[in-house]
Image 1: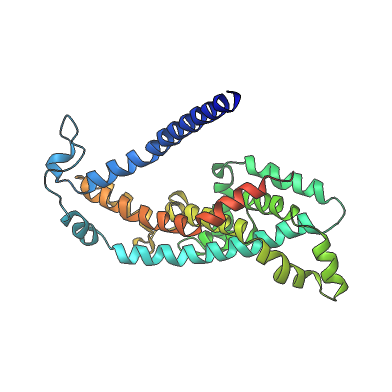
Image 2: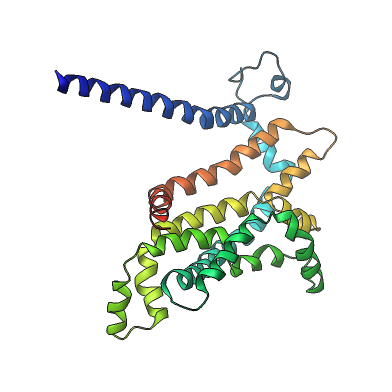
Length: 281
């Protein structure tokens, strides 16, 4: 009897869990479905009341019009030119810094790490003007450099994430490698980094999202429309007297697809990285 009651309660818990998960999934799926639906409607259907959840006639031409409305491929190329160095810079700089905080013993290490953590609370708006002045003196305004170079100097959130993960790797591995004659860089490159693939994948996803969706940075540092990114291109469509909302929706879907692809490709490592980064404090 007790066994049956326990099985019944477990079944109820599983049912409630699935209901909650389905409700949470709907919170994310419904807005994307609505975006997809709007991207396939004619302009006259967009503002119909009540809202139609699926268009009467599917307008695939909205996507063709999107490519013709602004220099999509030029802006895509500019975005990729900024994106790839940002991901490379984020991985190299943050793994090196996190390795120093997690695996090396040096005086005031924890104090310096606390200072790094404190910088996380600074909003971008606080550092925006000093950065602009500094880049202006370096004659970098109007180039991609202000959007690329900072990624090679560490990010406090990525450093924190990586350090937490690296703390979970047994130090005996490093000691064994040192006995075999390896130096710190060889331990970092050949032993620790291969083990840190899950959390590195997490950093790649966050760096991708941050750069792909960045609007403020390109808006501040780029003035020539030949250097615009896709996010600024979307703004240029909205800034007209007659915003073409169906084309904007098509652009929104197009910009969402790469994010979904990257996430699903690295999903396994991403979940491992987030879960294991919280093991040690």
